[in-house]
Length: 196
Ligand code: GRF
Image (cartoon, rainbow, N blue to C red; front, side, top):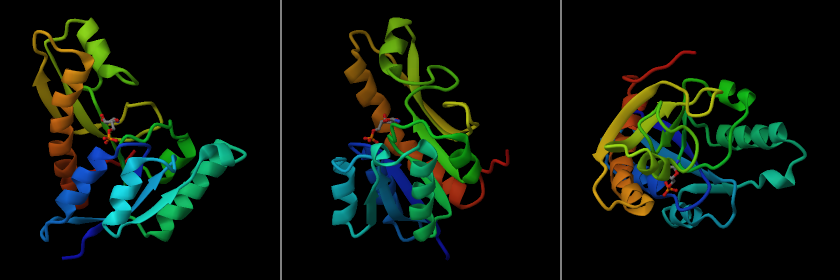
């Protein structure tokens, strides 16, 4: 079985990246994680990946004269790893249209809300402020509009009495770690496709 080659972009903790790495450790998983790139050198997720023998890179956008040059360099790193797919996993930069279009159909993200609800940041606090009865997460293809691309998988959790943004986020995160590996499996096997 030839496995799809996957690069992951992170900015911090990297728990979703770790969930993908753990899933890909199974011999029958259809994808392998070949590289992890962070825009922050101090991202804890980079150490996790390096300890497991995965290639890592860090690129600070502030060191580049423009966003396009930063993103072109990210593409060069991903191409050097010969990736078929790119997973955003807590990558806290909005990507420009050139980068998104370059990887169209091969670029996915995990977002902590039931999209199209709560695009952007602070999703848990916003769901609580609205009195939402449920919340969740979405793995979706990335398109130039923020958190707008078509969904691959979603998972729902109840909002419980007494929830804070932190307790709700923790309940959603368990589901993120469950569905991201499932969604990457669908992508790597061609069962999830998107042609813009
Ligand atoms: C996750 O909640 C993810 O949905 C969001 O940012 C967070 C990243 O967490 N995009 P981690 O770095 O994967 O632990």
